[in-house]
Length: 291
Image (tube, rainbow, N blue to C red; front, side, top):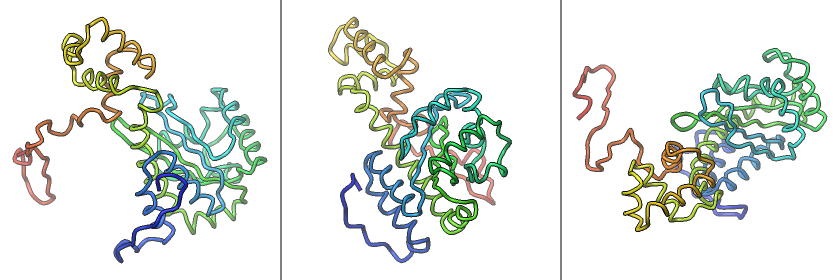
């Protein structure tokens, strides 16, 4: 699914069909999503098919406290919510801050479940009342983790449901929503990293420079490889840092890694290397586990 257009789904093996049809249909479609937009549209489509039209998707960076939001995406106009969250005392009691940062278990949320969750101050309960007035009365949210160092996120599916009706939806489709959220998040973040250069209008030449910085080369060597002067290189570096929002060389190097321009440092740099960690329960491989 490369966009909103239709496609012919691939046939499933019999062994792939031992999950709810709604789930394996979603996962099969997700295989064809090659942009963040396509992943998002498919996730919202799934939620709406279960009468959960309001989808929240929030991800924070790997800052020590996970306070720096990487992005926030919703299937509805959520400007009123962002305005409410400008108050730190309101934001700190959000389900993202209060639950997703610390736990991996899905959670029921919204005004209908306010008595079943951690204590919320009146200001936050007021936000839930406003959400309920707008049709976000109850929901099911899935905490998310991806990358190393990890990022933290939360996908919430909400609708205008009573507690009883929401429990019925979760009982029937909670497994589907949980797996769908985890799989969509992984797919979305892969494309999100690849789309960084398009979002920030970074040219092929700047991308090449970014990779060389990430590999640890000094300015003189990078300039020679690019066939430019050191002063021209530093000007390009300044422009790149401005586009990317980086503040120093270390952040540029980290960006090269997160954007997929460099090999994983935990993998052998030599493609012919057989350095593999081999572990087998019931055996004592000792140091021989590293060949």
